[in-house]
Length: 85
Length: 151
Image (cartoon, rainbow over all chains, first blue to last red; front, side, top):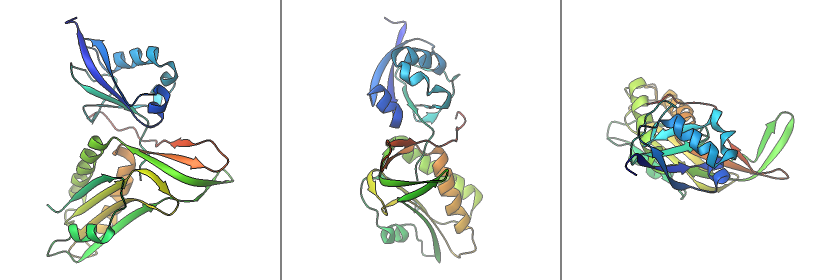
C-alpha cells in the first residue's frame, strides 16, 4: 500500500461531538490535498459536511486552505471558527 | 523576554502574571480580563448562562499566542512584556476566563491599545472554543466569524 499516506485527524468543539472522535487516523492517496481529505470526510461523516463551508483547517498547527497539499504523517485539524476569550 | 503564554485548567494569579511581565524599566501594565457573563441580551431575549465549557487545541493555541505577541510588538514597539492566558474546562458565572496584559515604561506607550489588539486578535486566531450551557435552552457551541488565511 505504498500509494497511501497516513494522516492524523483531529476534531474540536462541535465537530468533535458530531464525529464522536477527538483524534483518528485516515489513509489517503499520495499527493492528496485538503479538498480531497474533506471529500473523504464528508463520506465518512455526512453530518460534518454541512459544517464545511464554515470550517477552519490546520495542517501541522498552521492554518491551511483547500489547496494545501498533504504529505504522509501530517496532522490535520478541523474545527469551527474560534470563540475563545 | 518576559512574555508568558498559557492554556490552563486552573485559576490564574493576576499579581504573579503582572510581576512576571514587568522589567526593571516597567512603570505600567494594562490588563484585559474576560469573565463569564451570566445574562446576555440576544434579539430581545434575555439568555441566562448557567456555565461555560472551554476547549482548546492546546499546542497550536500556544503557538498562536506567541505569534500574537509578535504582532503586538510590531505595532506597539514600546511594550516590554506580554502575557496571554486562556482558562479552559468548566467555568462558572463570574469566573475569570482570559487575560491579556502588556507592560511598558509609561502608560502612554501603547499598552491600552496593545491589550485591546491582543484580545481582539485572540478571538480571531487562537484555537479555543466555548460551549454555552444555558438555562431552559439547548447547549450551544459559540462560533466566531473570522477565517484566517492559509499560512
